[in-house]
Each structure stands twice: as C-alpha cells, then as structure tokens.
Length: 261
Image 1: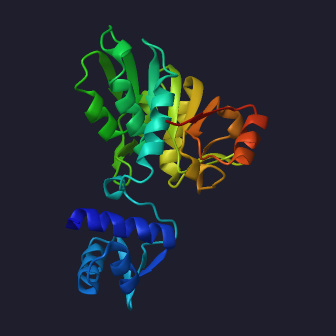
Image 2 (image 1 turned 90 degrees about the horizontal axis):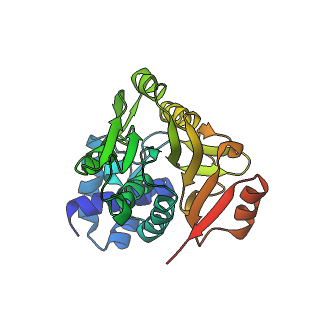
Image 3 (image 1 turned 45 degrees about the vertical axis):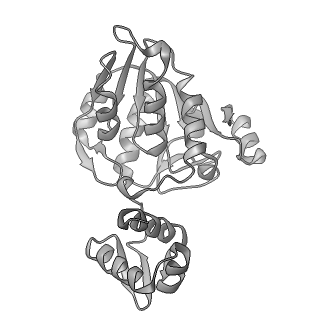
C-alpha cells in the first residue's frame, strides 16, 4: 500500500471512530506500528489529526474529511446513484451541481451519456465545485458556469457572497445536491454553514431539487441545514436503504429512487 493510500485509509478510520490507537491501525492496515507512528506524526504536522499517547484523535469537534483524502468508499453505490440521477436530466437543461464525491460521479455520468454528446449546448452546468468544473470543461458540448467565491479546501467548493451574486442571476431546471446527511424530519444538511448557504441558493434557483445520497447518509443529521425535506422533489439512494427510512421520506412527499446493479 502506498503512503498516500495509507494516509487516506487512516483518516477514514479516524473519522469513523473518532480515536485510533497505533496498534489497532497497524493491524487494520497490515503494516508495522513504527510506520503508523510516523504517519500519525506527519498527519499531525499537517493538522489533519491530533496526536495522543499511543494514537490519535480527530482534529476538532465537528470534523470533515477533506475531499482529497477521501478514499473510494461505497464507490459502487455512488456510481449507481449517479447514473440514476443523470438519467433524470433532459438534454438542453440547466443543471446545478454542488460539490462532493457523489455529485462528482453524477458529473461523470452526464459526461458519458450518448445523447449529450452534441448540442448547442447539450447541457448547461452551473457549479460552485472547482473539481467538477475542471472535469466537465473539456466537454465542448457542455456550457460550464462557475460561481465566484472563496475556495473551501475540504470540498473544493466556492463559497461566500461572490458565489451568491452569480447564483442570484441564473435560473435552473434542476439542482443536484450532494449532502453529508439527509433526514425526513430535519432535511438535507452539510457540515459547513457557508457551504450549506450556497447550496440553499442553488435549490431556490431550481425548478426541481434532487438529493443524491448513498444509503449511509439517510436518517443522519449534520450541523448546517441546506433545505427542508419538503423542498426536495426526488431522493436518489442505493438499494441498501432502510425501507422504513424510505417510507418516511415518501410520506413527506419525496419521490425516492433506489438505484442498484
């Protein structure tokens, strides 16, 4: 396992558990304890974690793993969700995409759709996610509109009043939200309030709102609400979704699509 892959795996474990011991991590990753100690020291220097006696804890109370460190967890589920979301978009529409791993997969699914290979434009994509804009900019048939704003390192999203200014001038057919949590009672949410605010504006500018979330995000809450459940038209998740949670969303008037192989 390369150092980069090992660091990603360590940070994922740390986010899941909140605390990680050297010996525990060494066993999980099948490397020596000395290697894990060095990794913890280097990650602590980058302020990615806090070193403790014999291990490490997450950095801060409300911790969000930066996008560049996220491994391909639940990648199959996210790709199934992404293809189902992409199928909801019609040629020629204006689509808003927030940042995140699932919405990045949505962008990739749109990019390979045969019926979007040509057009003037085939699709208009409005996004505040730098990585998504970068991936789609090479598609000449897509019109890419990027908001202004200040880049947020954790998600590559542009946030702040400059982004507000651009979004206030556009009208979208559909907004696709990537979320860290979505709950039938509390709605869709993000870790960061500034990110949530931009995503909220994107929803307000759209005719319909689609939440793209693998089943691990359902029934969870996060600090900053993006929108109420009633504002969501469609929730696309994977087939591992708890039927009871699905029923609760449907009772709120949300169309739920469970995507699988």
